[in-house]
Amino acid sequence: MRHRLDPLLNPRSIAVVGASERPGSVGSGMVEGLQACAFGGTIYAVNPKYDAVHGLPCFGSLQDIPEAVDLAIIGVNSAHIEGQLADAIARGIRAAVIFDTCYVDNDPERALLARLKAMAAEAGMPVCGGNGMGFLNMARRIPATTYNAADKMREGGNVAFITHSGTVFSEIGLNDWRYGCNLVVSCGQEIGATMAEYIDYALEMPSTRAIALFMEQARDPAAMETALARAFAQGVPVVAMKVGRTPAAAAFARVHSNADTGRDADYEAMFARHGVLRVANMEEMGNLLTLLSSARKIADGDLGVVLDSGGEREMLVDLAHDAGVAFAQIGEKTRARFAARLHHALEPVNPLDAWGTANNFEDDFQEFFSALADDPAVAITMFCGDFTWSPTTEGGYSKALVGAQAGTAKPMAALINTPMSGLMTAGKALSEKGIVVLCGTASSLRALRLAFAWRDR
Image 1: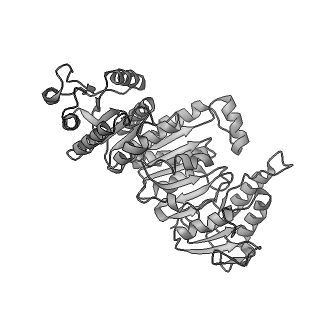
Image 2 (image 1 turned 45 degrees about the vertical axis):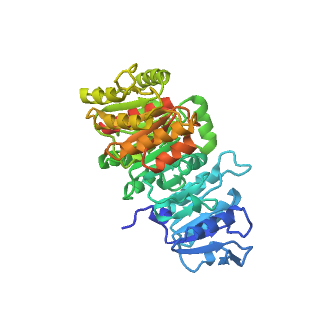
Image 3 (image 1 turned 60 degrees about the horizontal axis):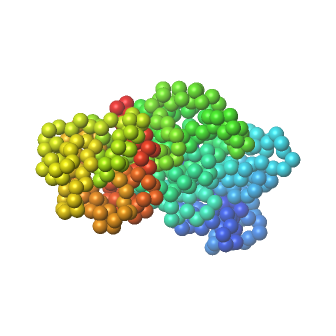
C-alpha cells in the first residue's frame, strides 16, 4: 500500500505547469532537472504558449493531459495558482508542488492561502509548499524544484531534512559535503502535507539514519507527537532547530509563512518527551548531523583529544566544561604509550598537547591517535586544531588520522577551530576518507554533547 505522500515524493508521472524553453527560467529549470536526473516516469509539459518544451510535447492545460498523473509541479505565480490547483484536482492528479508565496495584492487577510488549504483538504491531496523550494528525493533521483538540481543529487545519503525555510533547504540540505541527504523537503506553508507527515514518510525510507527539522511551528501537534515517538522507537535521531522563540522572531514568522510559532516551553517539553536533539544554530546542526550520519557509531566512554597547542587546549577545556562534555579518564597503558613518544616537557594526559619537535611528528601523532582509540574509556578520538598554517604539518596530521583510523572501529574526528581554516582543503579530503570533520569549537562540542546524549538514550 502506497504511503499518502508517495504520489508526491515518489511519483510515477509528473506534469510541469509553466514549462518553458526560456533559458534560466523556472519553467525551463523544472523540466531540465527532471531530464538531467533521468526521471523514469512520464513528464508532461504544460504551457499554452508552446507546442513543445525541451523535446516534450506541450499541453495547453492540465485538463488536456491524457492521463491522471501522480504529481503536478505548479511553477506559476500566485495569481494563477488557484486555477491550476483546481484543474489538477478536477483532472484527478494525486499531488502537487507549489513554489510561490500564495499571497496576492489586495488580499490582506490572505484568503488565497486559506482557500488553497481548503481545496487540498477537501480533495485529500498532498501539496508541498507554497512559499518553498519543493523537494529533492535523492534516494530516487527525483527533483521537484525551481532549477536544474542534477549536480546536487548525491548517492548514498542517509539524512532526511525537512524545513519551513526555502533558503535553509539549500544551506543545510544541499551544500554541506560532510553528510548526504536521502530526502530534502521545503514544506513551506504546508498547504496539503505537514512536517509530521514528511517525518513519517522518511521513517519508511530504509536509508534514513537521521532526520533534521528546521521548524517554525507544528501545524498538527498531535501528528507531530506521533511522528517523533515513532522516530524514537525506531532508533532514528531527530535533530530540530526551532525558530521564533522571541516575540520579534514570532512576528516575522507570521509574515513569512503565516506560522504561529507558539510557546517555546511547549516545544521544549515535546522535544524532551521524544528524545529530540535541539540545536541552537545551523553550524551546530551541521556538526551534529555529521556525527549522527557517520558509518562509525560513537562507542561507550568519553572524548579523547590530541592537540598541537597548549593555548588551544586551555580553550578547549573551558568550552567543553561549558558544553557539558567530559574527557575520557585514560588508563595507564595509554599514558605509557603517550610517554614513549612525547617530548620530555609534556604530560601524558587527555586532552593531550602533543607538539614537541617536527622530527617524526607524523608517526608520533598516529601513535597518539591510536593509543586513544584503543583505550576502552574513549568513545571518539579527535584532533583539535587548524589546518592552514603549514602545508607539511597539515598533511602530516591528516595522514596520521587516516592511518590511525585503519586500526579501529571507533570514529576518528578532526575539529577545525575556525571554520574557514582548512575546511575546504584538508577538511574535505578527510571527510572523503571517513574522518568526521567538525567546524567551530563551541558548536562542535555542543553537537558532541547531543550525540553522546543520543547514544545514552
